[in-house]
Length: 500
Image (cartoon, rainbow, N blue to C red; front, side, top):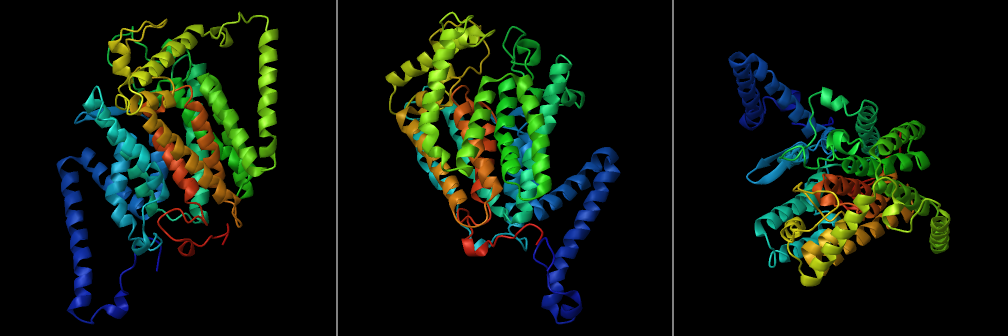
């Protein structure tokens, strides 16, 4: 039996055994003939567009037989948030690929190396996120704009339910582990290099030369676009530097993991190269959240590899706090204000404090169920809030994922979401600590989760593709060889050592 779909009976032994054997071959032959005539027709009618049809068919066949290539395309699409509106819902390249994945999922499950359908069950992530989805649904009761919050509910289901379900078509053997690790290290480097080029060329992007635009909101030039010509910070295809920063810092965790625990020697060298490029991209993005996320990655991975360090963590945090307080007291240029802690950008700090206070006051008005996920923006503008930086730009958010969830879904939603993050972190660490081979993707997922949790304190990630990236990384971490947390029992997923 060859790799790919489950093979049909051998022609030499089955042919001539009766009508049933011939019937098994009749349908594939008829389909192949119909497809061939259809492709010929398209090419003859419009040669240029017709050539795209066989290419699309070949891509579908490739993705069906080798779904890991669709995984690589999906990781790339997350960094190209070109967005259109379909029936009022925002749809981008990642959404389109996810829908394609759903359509191909039954065919992927027919592959010889696919997980057994009879033993399939929903992944653990779906059960863990269920309370949060329930809280988001209950927030519809007090939603100030039900249509807007309903769209966010659909997006949450797409991120946290649909994506983990389609990923169950993958079998995480050692070969797939190496492919996924290499993809997660190298593909983000393309956008890090694009960001560095954008910074050095004063806004000109390599991806722009390829015709890939950045997402710019509707309206005039007086609106904040967060592009290089406004902020002076590189954002690559994201436009905004924060999108590039969180994308790089979450995937950077896998470079760190492969440097410290490589499945093969060449992957450590690749990890060093990719880490250097990611750091360069973070530098030109000039993101505070990116710096905090990078520190969180290093700390989380170090604590995972050296459990003895966990006992010293409280003392270490106390020491850093004391050093920070003393350092601020001796800082000659510091004027004693919070805004002075961020040189060159005091207005953005003061505006965050105003926005955070408004999110907290909104929670006090709607403490249990909130005002509907995604409705904080509308509430903010309706109250005619004053900010140091004009925000006519319609995608204002709380600049803090936790405060945004608190305002949108109340304490019920925030507690459910924090419980989800804590439960996933616990399962990842338990998977790493169990006897046997150590899955490097699990180590990378631990670092990515730490980066996300810290970065979420200074930005609102529901506005990015980053929750799709988060769930992708967590799913790969939980589906490492030896893990019983996907729809296939442990006994059905033997670990294959590299080179075997």
